[in-house]
Amino acid sequence: MSELATTLAGALAESLGYDSWGFPESCNKSTCFLRLNHYPPCPFSSDIFGLMPHTDSDFLTILNQDQVGGLQLMKDSKWVAVKPNPSALIVNIGDLFQAWSNDVYKSVEHKVMINSKRDRYSIAYFLCPSYESTIGSCKKPSIYKDFTFGEYRKQVQEDVKTTGQKIGLPRFLLQNISL
Ligand SMILES: O=C(O)CCC(=O)C(=O)O
Ligand SMILES: [Fe+2]
Image 1 (cartoon, rainbow, N blue to C red):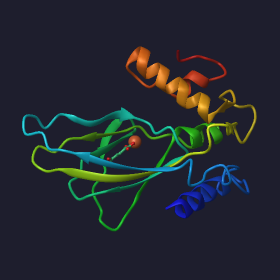
Image 2 (cartoon, rainbow, N blue to C red):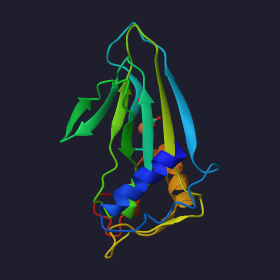
Image 3 (cartoon, rainbow, N blue to C red):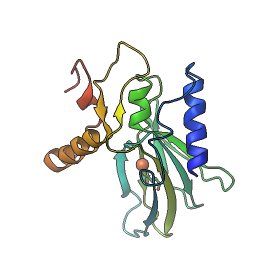
């Protein structure tokens, strides 16, 4: 999985004209992780979040969902269901790739809706660097100020605690227009 993730990250960087995305050595077995998600059914409503709308705080996420469905992503201001496909993995861009690419790649907002009858399972692999890694933009002028991954995680946790929501990258805009 780690090989696939770093190969994909490299290909995304190459398509922007860069030899490397700069972080292959700081993303390793001790910084990347796998999350096993279980969404028990909820018979009372078909309109319940299994996972609230969010973006992932990583470079990219490789996701394997089962056949139940429920994953939706934001496209052109609309929620679009991601149809389960047993022979495909889903690759989502995360916040760090958005910052590194200076907004060329966008971190995709996604959520999970609960199924009323069936348990749902998914496996997500998160490509993350060490907390000390500085995430700068690949080209200047940069939209975001440089930050370490540790600073980013800390800010996200603080915002969730104080506002109930993740604010994410807008916190790090150099011209703080949206806050
Ligand atoms: O269960 C899914 O399909 C999505 C999981 C997810 O978005 C996450 O773990 O961050
Ligand atoms: Fe996610």
